[in-house]
Image (cartoon, rainbow, N blue to C red; front, top):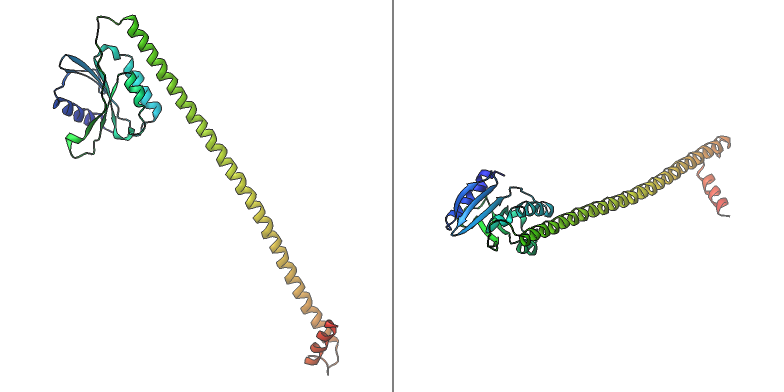
Length: 227
């Protein structure tokens, strides 16, 4: 995803709403003004972000959050459903959602969560510093929980695959055993039929000429068998 396209789209949208770009810290970080407020904006271009990635972005913003009246992170639309709204609101960081594929510039940007403005003072007070530390701790704890949850899910999936593989191997073993039995039965049947044909040939060969190939002989043999 192009950072240049995303930044241009967002800057134009914000400019139309009265904000003004006053500084570009780098390709992803922009400083704007909105009346008397200074606004920090961080642009994310991760096309398929995870919850852990989102908390990392929030952690990066929180390092300088109290240097600006407002702070935002701009995410691509794929983050919908992954945002922890309570965490962002408590940290007073807003979220913009952008869609580079939109054909309508007015609808290409959406303010999903507004940034709650804070009053700045000369230098960070002890109270603000404690808040920063507290938010960073919360974010790090959440990130660790997400990583642990991902690992547990991965282990569970691996164990489930192992169980399925074991069951498949068991069924294949049973199937191979059945095929072997059927092959043995087929060979025994072929052998019995061959022996029957050989015995019949021998008997016919030993009979006198007037009885050999006589149909009444087979009839008598069958009656003898029934008795």
